[in-house]
Image 1 (cartoon, rainbow, N blue to C red):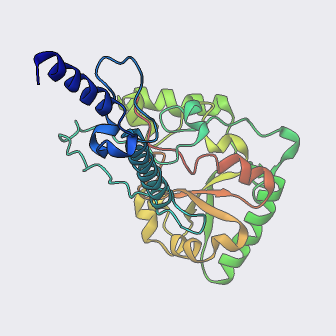
Image 2: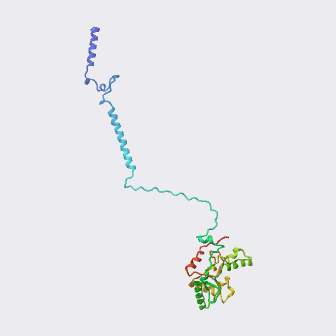
Image 3: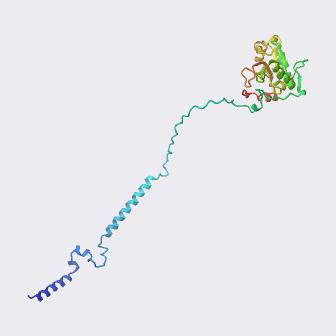
Length: 286
């Protein structure tokens, strides 16, 4: 066979190979696109469906996880949320405070009106004054005088002689008692105020106050020895029945010296309102 025949035979064989049916081409070769052919591989036979299915599975897994997180982290309507307990801060230890001057407990509004521990009082009207005892020049308000006379009678029935020493005093009378006696004794104003009120500040102005002595032991008049007498002991036991009380007991809130002989009437509204302003007075400092 010459070269020409051999060449034609090879060409014929090549054409025969090119006309081979798709079924004769191996599957691995049929799935691949010809290089540089410019055409896309068959979508049905490419690997993208696998990627798509995998992506969907991943997205689905993320969605399921998010849903589980929402339902587990969100409290249900039937769940009672407990409040978070608060922790109180530890107490702070401070340095000791500088000692302060004691303040009076429940001071009376009248504190601003007092003078050397005494409250201001108005003089009783002349028309309301009556003799403390029949024929006496000493006077009290009528209601107080009536009760004092009844008290004297009751004491006498018990063998006790209550003797009035001083009753109503005007502001002018108190001027002499406070300033003239202060000068005679060389007392300071504060020392004098411990035993006698300044003018305008004496309970005697009211017509309700009276100084009482023991008629059987006059040496005890106007001094603390009066507390040792039968008259004082009787007053302690019985004066309240006649609406009288001691004005300046021991350690009284006004800082006035103990006066067992000084008693006041508190048997009606006016007398009660007049004196009970003094009950909450703290000791004043000049």
